[in-house]
Image 1 (cartoon, rainbow, N blue to C red):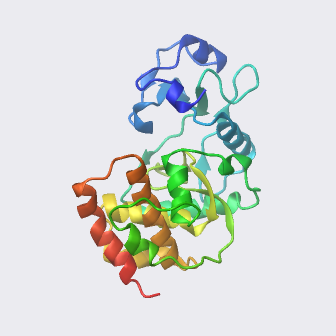
Image 2 (image 1 turned 90 degrees about the vertical axis):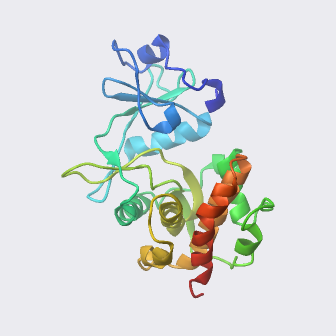
Length: 270
C-alpha cells in the first residue's frame, strides 16, 4: 500500500492501532506531516510511502546509536514483526518543536546524523523511487532533463562536476529537526537520497533563504567548510525548483520568492 492509498485526513483504523499496540485513546491529528500524522499516547502514526523504503529506514533507525549531536525517533514494529501495516508506520514520539529560523543548528544536527549513517550501502529503492521529489533529484544531477521553466537554464549553466563522495543523506532537514531544552536536536521524517553529505545542508540552506528569512547574501556562511559548497547550493536550488514544477505548484509568487536566492547563489565566486 502506498501513501496515496491512505486518503487525506484519514485516521489510522482500530486494526492499525491494535497491530502497533496503541490505544485505547482516539487518534489525535498532529500539525506536522502534511496533516496526515496522528498520535495515540506516545505513538506517532503516519502513512507510509514505498513499503521497501519505509522498512529499510525502520531497520536502520532501530539499531542506530544516537550521540550528543542528535536524537532520533525509534520505529515501532507491528505485531506481525513488520514495520508497516495497513498503509501505516508507527514511531515513538519525541519532545521538541521545529524551528526553521535555526538553520545553523539544523545543519549541525544534520552533519552529526550524516556522520552516523555514512557507512550505509546504497539502498536498492533509490533506483526505482518515482515521485516528484526523487525525480527532481535526478533532474538536479543531470540524470534526467530539467523541466522547462523559471531559472532552470540559469542554474543548469552553473552545473559543474561534483567530486565529493555520495552516501545516504537526509534531504529535507530544515523542518524536520526538533529542538527541546536540555536535549540534543531530534532528527525526524528521514527523506533519503544518495548524494554528497553536504547536499543535505545545502537544501536546508536554500530552504531557509527561500522561505524562512535567512538572508540570501549570507548563504555562503552556512557552508562552514563543506566541500564544493557553491555547487551544492546550485544543485539544491535546482532540486527544490524542479520539485515545485513537478508538483505543478510553480507560480508568479514562486518566481518572486526564488529569484533573489538564485541570483545570490550564482554570484558566489566559483
